[in-house]
Length: 112
Image (cartoon, rainbow, N blue to C red):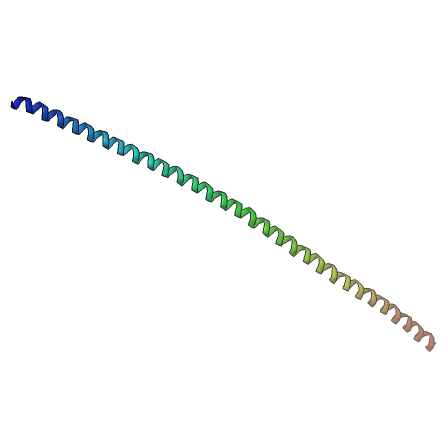
């Protein structure tokens, strides 16, 4: 009778080991799949952040370009106003110089 029980116990033990190995393999497969999905998600998030950074850089550069154009336009406008004032002043100075030359000529004529 011992000999009948012994193979039965061995068979049950082997079945239990086989089931345990199958369970371990299934668990390893699940963990592997989960880690691969996690890696994939990390790659997707990295790409998303990289794209957002690039877009933000484009927007910042565009804003800086606009600021630059506005500042340069203000500079041009201010330069034009100052040039105009200086030109008017120079015209007035030339006019006054001619008037003084005329007066000097008249004084010389009066003296003679």
